[in-house]
Length: 182
Image (cartoon, rainbow, N blue to C red; front, side, top):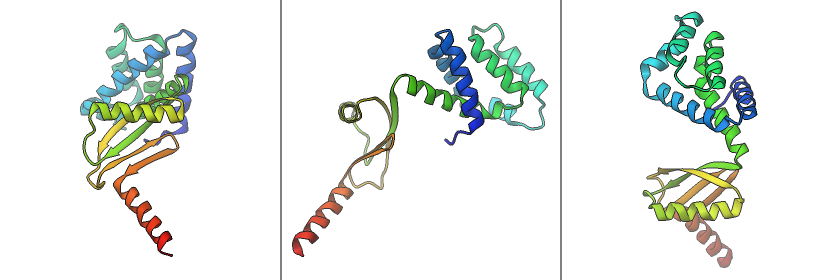
């Protein structure tokens, strides 16, 4: 997801406020829970993205939905501000930018792994351990099956690519054979 500079600023401001009170982990979990509703409930998502509904109506819905429900003051005020400024459409980007800020705070790097077939839990742990050792950071990986791979895995973590696919091994083997033939 591409994150706009506006969304990064909201996330940075929210992080600063929440961190002052030691509530940044709580704010993160609250943002994720609300974002989940936005992703799974098309009615909520469409309502806040509808340009025909004015900021006052959206502000009233936010107040009615979240006031007195145990939401942290920082997250609640951020939602109010977004509704008031008619920027609720940026909410998911703000959550992603906040997650990036949390990753920096916790020295975490995120990445993705593609494999021809689903990896077992043991294989996932081994892969995570090897990459963690190389990068000297905690990593969080998402796993996807890619039927275009013949076998093996390709992991992209931060700016690194770890390619242990059969295709790459075959290419290297071909290059080695060609070098020796010449």
